[in-house]
Image (cartoon, rainbow, N blue to C red; front, top):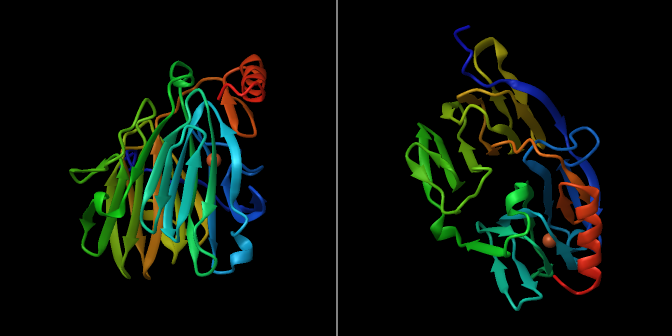
Length: 282
Ligand code: FE2
């Protein structure tokens, strides 16, 4: 029982190749048949290509209601515009945490016609009590994202949550999310504290990581998600240079009624979302 507080891998697998928006090629990691959701994390897409045909069409105007979209750009530039006149440019290393609340209509379009575009979009659910709040944006530039040294050779960009006394800039809500972009140099290892009850995953986007403690450790190769058990800490090591995201959120344990860009609690609320959108009420 000595490892009872240590998280282990309960499921690992690759994402599913798909396309979304006007034909952007991406890998759906959460929100696909093998991993429909990880309460409160509803979806994770990884996009990454240096072929403009894979991203140039972007995500023209579309609505959202009832949850948050989190876009983290590793490389590239994406311009965001909405129907309330809000506009922002997401550049390499920046994050946008958008709470759709009662509704927005926006577009997310590449602001480049060549070169690498790479990053993640995560969907985080909102509790019933916050689904109809006013929309809110947090556009955070790279110089506002602190780096924490977690161990020798292990550094984390802290987007949200707290690690080693370093607090991320995102003002978070009921799901108390953690979002770290972690770089492990070859032959490094680290123990990371996490709130016990949060659902959490690791997604390796470069290299390979050993996740879990001692005999329970599992090798997680590149472009693989590892869903973690509960526990108060996570042990990760890497034999080669490795980059991964570690994301955690407090489960809401509420009914989820979801269709396309709307995530509510009941079918009636979904019908209302469609009706309001069609009536131009967003
Ligand atoms: Fe969107």
